[in-house]
Image 1 (cartoon, one colour):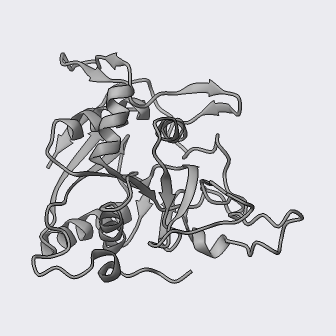
Image 2 (tube, helix red, strand yellow):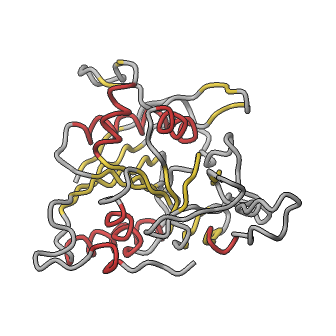
Length: 274
């Protein structure tokens, strides 16, 4: 599948392709951020500035409860005037153009992710495709429909985030007197223990939104080494590799395959905004 260029997505505009768009980068960060992740973030901010993209950075630092950290970031987004929320996990490595690409695609799609490998030499991608008619079918932007994915590199529209927020239970987080929403959660499912990001994708589908995957983006996932890969390289032709002719992502994670999280005490962290 050929990579759709930013110019094709953006069209032609004398005032620039990002006019009217603003993005909050949401990063839940338990402890230290790897140097390569920090470098990717710095280069991305520089790319925002070169391309006149309005941006802000919201980090939740020190919380071992990642579903709390993510819910707090959603609260900050709701209180902002940003048009899009870009989730980036604190163990990812990426190119700045990949974020700009997802922001442009986000003009058309409410939710678009890029897949990344599990932290294992034998692991596949944390993606569950939404296969219809036994085939992987892409849209005009080169994206394919998905049911679930790891949230570590995902762009969401304000429309979708607001719908998730309004649907969530009301709550209060320790140290914050204001009312918030329990957008992310952990619970047991028919497939086993559900990660907070996988359960969010279930909510996205339940609320009538379609999630998409851009299979052209290559990401690094930092563990004991950097596990790099591009989902598109794992696609199999529909007429090969399976008895029923079903195209799929090789060794793709199922509904209970969420990102690995560091162990730590049950503690709340602190917010940092830029």
